[in-house]
Length: 175
Image 1 (cartoon, rainbow, N blue to C red):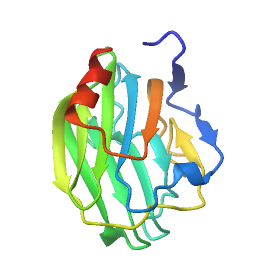
Image 2 (spheres, rainbow, N blue to C red; image 1 turned 90 degrees about the vertical axis):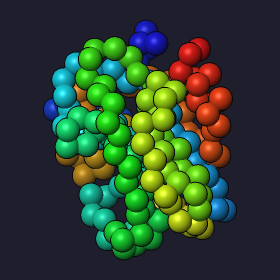
Image 3 (tube, one colour; image 1 turned 135 degrees about the vertical axis):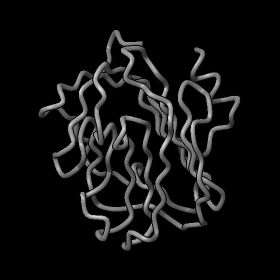
Image 4 (cartoon, rainbow, N blue to C red; image 1 turned 180 degrees about the vertical axis):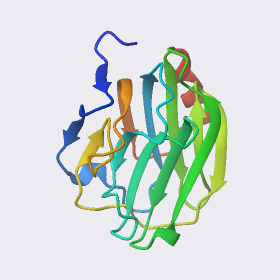
């Protein structure tokens, strides 16, 4: 980890990936987004990954980051109304200067879960949906509204169009 990590300064650094159909989730797919991260600061309410306009009434979207206490946070919205979204907030602290594997799994019609270092941190029920797609770009290191910049490092970012199993997540965390 870390030799080629993306480094974000918490002020303006970000990476923008132009919208592509591969960044949208369709056909009732489950989803896994996984990456390594490292930071020393608390990073309250910051984004690691965002395909979200900053307005919950714009449409389907997703994002991952830290919550109001610096804990893990993951959010998926599958309709143009914010009531059709779910967030999950973990409790494991990640601001210890060590590398941590952050994995967000959305199991369509079952739940959305956060794993830290291969360990289930939190999970909430998630209803069935047909797609999470929009025309927005994908951002790393900030919210798509160019706010809430992350200070730290991201590495080995992976997006799957299926839910990884506990065994697969454990493997990623240990290899």
